[in-house]
Image (cartoon, rainbow, N blue to C red):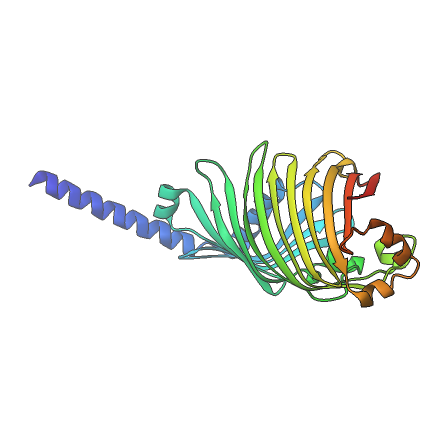
Length: 286
């Protein structure tokens, strides 16, 4: 009888404690919580970046960050703007499974997934209807002249030798050929791709690439990139490209059309090997 009463009191104590904790959580003052969360994020960002958050709110389901802006210092140019970031976690579920679900409203699309802390930190994500040309950094380049929609999914593990995979598809991608935007000393026709798909696998510094496109250029690209984090321009790559241009697009190439003939195989497709580094690329016929 004593043991049952003790268990009853213990359960009652735990229940009341849980209600007190929940009440304290959902009644946290946003005016105090917002700068605290903002400072925690900034501590973990590289020094050249700073995060601004309009408002942080708590709820029974977790934490909501409204209007998160990442700026590049000292110019304070916006790098990424998140409309809303919601972190969902129950106290018991977090203690048992060491994971947090998240949903991010970004550039008229949604990024959602799960952040795991055990047995190692990893991030799963799914991207839906993301309009990448709404990103201020990308839009400022004027390279993309359309409003492509991106869908995809993948994962990333946080370690000294990170592993990741990104599978994506993009529709309605148009790329400018103007020299002032491409930094190439000659003009090319604008390129429209109705579909652009990819599967990118990262293992430490090695990146396996598999890309395909449809449109003005129907192509397949496969190969490997060896990343140089200290000097990205010195990253080495070895990629094989096979593709075919539409007759209309090829006719717009001007004198480059005659050069392109040297890189076609017997089936009329362009077949080349791209190697070297970004600073010193090499192109040869396959």
